[in-house]
Image (cartoon, rainbow over all chains, first blue to last red; front, side, top):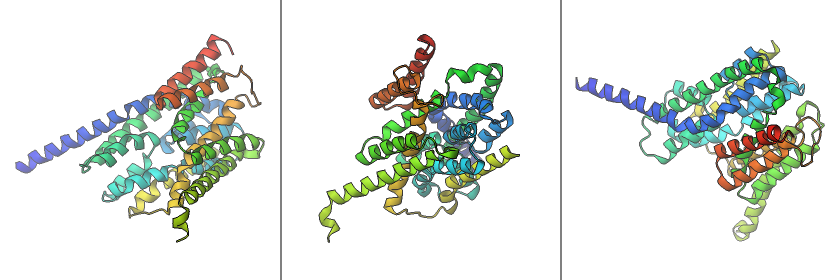
Amino acid sequence: MNCNVMDQDNTSLKRREMLDGAKATVPLIIGAIPFGIIFGTLAGPSGLSALGALAMSVFVFAGSAQFIALGLLAAGAAIPVIIATTFVVNLRHILYAANLVPKIAHLPHRWRVMMAFGLTDETFAAVSNRFLLQDNTEHAHWFYLGSWLAMYGNWVFCTGLGIALGELFPDMTDWGLDFAMSVTFIGMVVPYLKSKPMWGAVVVSGVIAMATIGMPHKLGLMVAALCGISTGLSLHLLLKRQSAPESEHE
Amino acid sequence: MNEALLILGMFLVTFSVRYVLFGVAGKVRFPPWLTTGLSFVPPAVLTAIIVPAVLLPRGELWLRADNPWLLAGGFAALVSFWRRDLLTTIVAGMLCFMLLRFGFGL
């Protein structure tokens, strides 16, 4: 009897965590709605079938990488180049995982697989507060599940909606809605710009991206990103050495 | 067939990156330079996408004051510096872009 009551309490606690997780993700989902719709509308004109676009959202579930893949497809890039670019673009997720891993290492393997699949920018932003700033994380994986289900459901739904809209209004691609991707990325980059190395990374990356625009397979994107990353890291190490010259010589 | 291959490949690299640390679930300690290096990945990659997208929206360099991609992009960056909020930036940038494109017919 007592056990039963506890079970019930537990179930409602899990449900509550899932709901809270979904709620915490709502503002981020609002930002992802135009993103998903526009991905769906641009797929056809970029050379990806409707089924392919939907499958990409279902299996890959990585907004920026999917957008970039469309751009590369439209430019006629080879498949290995698109996959390599996807890898570089998604490398940032390893940082998110490194932040969360101490809090989730005790969970069963199937939970960790689920969490890995749903580790998007948005879900990380929503769950990092729950995991890293609050104490009682015993049921926080249900919060994570709620966040990613909301995010995933919305992403797949909006992709489908976009595909349908794109077929209804074929001239939508002339409206310049691809700007939604640029503006989203601008809003993601600016908050990083708080230090000289970060400015260095961004400026070099932008300049090299323009200088390498003629490279085949859009390889310029990767070259530019790698130059930017090396610049940022070099500046960071240089500034650190300058600010602590004495400890270096010990 | 090619599409299935593309999606499979993208799935594999994306999931691997997200899964590798969760899978081993041990105490992972990156050397500090690697953590620092990785922190430059998102802004560097995103900038390498944004800059050509706003300067060459139609495949040719369009560095003039009648390029709505460039104007609205600059406006969005200002809004982002001011408010530091992603949703505000997206809404303001898109509104500015729509106004320039359909209000002023640029």
